[in-house]
Amino acid sequence: MEQQHQAHLARLGQLLEVIHATKDMRARSTLFKFYRNCSDCYKELDREMVNCRRTRRVTPKYTELEARYKESITVFEQWTVMAKLMF
Image (cartoon, rainbow, N blue to C red):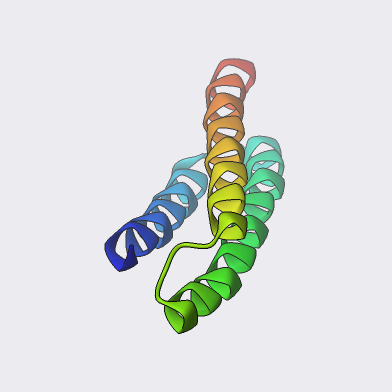
């Protein structure tokens, strides 16, 4: 459970590296908006992880938030492709 949560944080760092590697400012601005959404989802996930540690099991809310986080990552990746094609 802890390792998977750390992997989510590492993935968030990789997304930030993608933004820094993007040259066009318009594309960076757009991607940063999607990054903020991913970051906000991770923050909620992290708060729920505290509850999971306290109860020593994965809560249904954590599972729901994790699915939402993964969906926001997917959207970010799709927009990365769109930004590369558009700019």
